[in-house]
Length: 157
Image: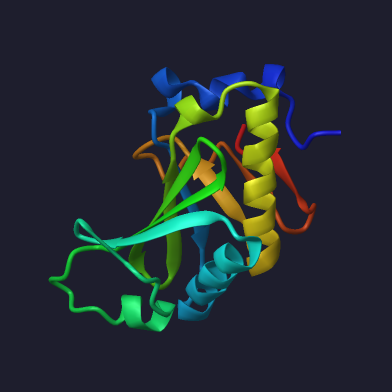
């Protein structure tokens, strides 16, 4: 049984309603959680790319990335948990793991299942919730991984 059923949540994946790049985040994190994310990406063998500015580089430690000067460009970790589905993590602050995924890449039950699998793997590895909000609306969670229930569920009203 899937965590979410496409016909029941399709509006949550409508780029016209949610914005093409909704805000996903893991709240209340630390540099250790960022490192756990980097370790998970390596452990799962997900295709990935670390970029500073426009320069692809080897993935450094999370402590190194988060200790960069304030005026430095924000590095990105681009992760493909499955073919044709990209998550872009931005190292904005150690207290929150922030990332985007393009809703146009998450259409239909098969892609929704892959998306839920990714959120579950991330949330389980960090033992934390993973929340999705409409683009630019952090105060309106729509769905996310619930570590207590150990599944992705609809949030909010």
